[in-house]
Image (cartoon, rainbow, N blue to C red; front, side, top):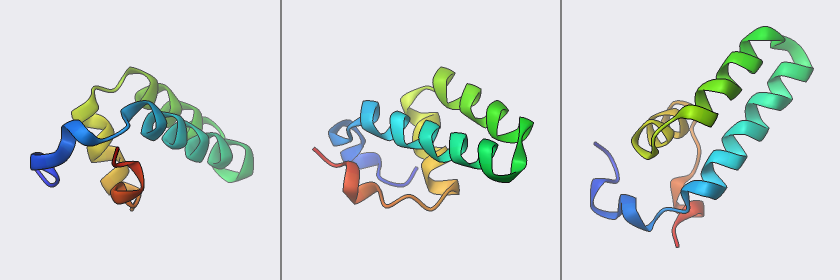
Length: 66
């Protein structure tokens, strides 16, 4: 897993909030239901799953380091 050495130093609360915001913008902008489903995934995601979603969305994880 990428970032495995420092994954405990990540602000998961902030990462979750930003991923939800990203998907909410998509939901309103163009994808409708898909953005909503992605938001639901983020709300229930484990920390490991959050990292995978952030990687998929090309988030800069350095921004979330504590």
